[in-house]
Figure 1 (cartoon, rainbow, N blue to C red):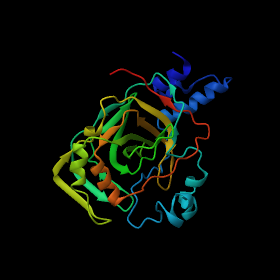
Figure 2: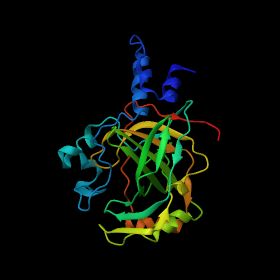
Figure 3: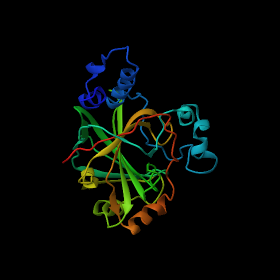
Amino acid sequence: MTSEVAFYVAFRPEESAVSAHSAKATVHMTLLCSLIFCAHSTFAQGKPAVGAPWSYDGSNGPDHWGDLESDFAECKVGTQQSPIDIRDAKETELAPIHFDYKLSPLKIINNGQTIRVDYEPGSSVTINGIALPLTQFHFHHRSETEIDGQKYDMELHLVHEDPAAGRAAVIAILIKSGTENAFLRDLLSHVPQKVGEEVDRKKVVINAADFLPADQNYYAFDGSLTTPPCTENVKWYVLKTPIEASPSQIAAFAKYYPDDARPIQPLHGREILQSNFHK
């Protein structure tokens, strides 16, 4: 096993004691830090309030986010911004993500930027021994992430954060037009019609695991929130296998948000890795 692979797979902070004489080892330490989710405590994750000062078009659109408020400066000057166009990913020995998603009562919000579902505490993912709670998931139309320049019809972001430990990760699932998605159908039937409205259905239970594809291989890279304040040091895992939703379901979401996708951001030399494990 190469030293690079060892860093990614071991996932142990004590292995940061690499020899300083190797520039390559220094790079590997940075990559290790990203896999240990060395995230900023300011990951006040993407839960924009109604009336937030940013939007997806016009003078408050993505090209201007960095100038709207001082806290949004990273949107303009950051060097690890998301989303990205995934190209030339390096196949590496990466461990599977362990999903431990449980049932949660439905709490769904139409917040003016997307449709978001807040998740009850108790669900998490574990990556090489590091557990992160699932806090919410939301959707984008069209996809924010691209694969070799190709956009998908929608994208789901499962957001995991542990503010006390300063760790954050987004697991992204691409959605393409195809057969009806039963879980998405149920969610769409409960979407609040008014911006700012929140629906709390304690008798309706959901499980985010119903969105997961059978093959959970992924691309991994360092990134940021895709909405202001565009906080960096967020670890991204984009599942390589898309799921499907029917054309009518995609159109139903687009009626609320026809374009809630940030444009592709420069890589600035970031390395993109990909797993290739067998289930």
